Image (cartoon, rainbow over all chains, first blue to last red; front, side):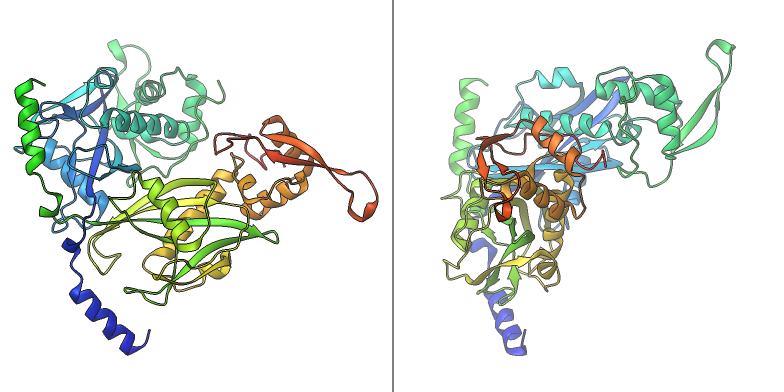
Length: 247
Length: 247
């Protein structure tokens, strides 16, 4: 670009006002999952404002151009503002946008899927009347706001698909945990039983866990169980072979 | 929702004006691939307007809330308006949004990956100075507009990842084609040679092709080659086992 082109572009940008154009509404929504007493739960918020007031929904909200620098930061911010929790693991699932999903106008939402160890939640802003961890089946049975039932279903599918070849369920456990607890987390997410020996071989050969001690044997008898935590910085990028393939 | 709640929501919506809020710019961008003389190409457009005037870019543009009903319709419309081509196969890759990728302001783009048999292209709107099918390596070597080099790279990776377990490259060929031509398309997308017998067994057992005749043998000698076309309605949802795994 020549200097004159550059100056010309500069003038264009100075005169450009985004408010001159009607842009779609842009939101982020987060389906965050955890395990409570071994069962998969999802966090929902009850809407205190129009539209869809009184309905349960995924936590989320509008991008704030003055506050957010990226979409994933906006997702983390909205989650924390509305529910008080922070997600150690957050990934983008997909984006839905059309002229019917929100009665306020053409609306785009970027859906995120998140995982965390169980923690309490609470409503922190006026736009939220209540927050609650729901057993997944109960949440799917609700008449959720907007198209959030479809969004929740897509996030749930992403989680279970990826659990076949990643170690995502590790993010639903408090450390330290035993391999039995980790296997139960995988089984709950997959909805299927796994063969113990092959599960352990795969997890250990993936080299994603640090052994950090021993739990006393249940009832004081037998061998103690080894305790583990995920290696630092473990995200989705630690792949094991497809779990369950050797059943 | 009670009738009074409903009336209250109705009043809220009547008073809601999306233009009262500063919403991010929302665009769609399309990385569309084809094979020309057996080599993978991508379609780029040369920008005629600010910003980034004169740079090559992926075809795309703003959502038009009055014209588009969904994101994927907007992607198809922008592709056709800017280049004259229509994509028989289009899938969403991911969404990028932040406060730096576009000098006009907070900007979100939803990236699509598309495939088609080779067809000519031409600039149809004032915002496009030129259109051209580029060999992929040459396109990646360009100083593309905005973050389009990253977008193109993500689309290229999605295509090659999915080619390991779907029949996507079938969409790059004009029908009818021989199995040898289809194998060459897979090999070009994957950047790797495939074993002929196992490729044929997998494609044929996936039951995704209709046999529609025979091509005369090259040079008039030997056995004629069977000609195929993809079954009607074939999208991405025809999975073969991972190609190349039996090499």
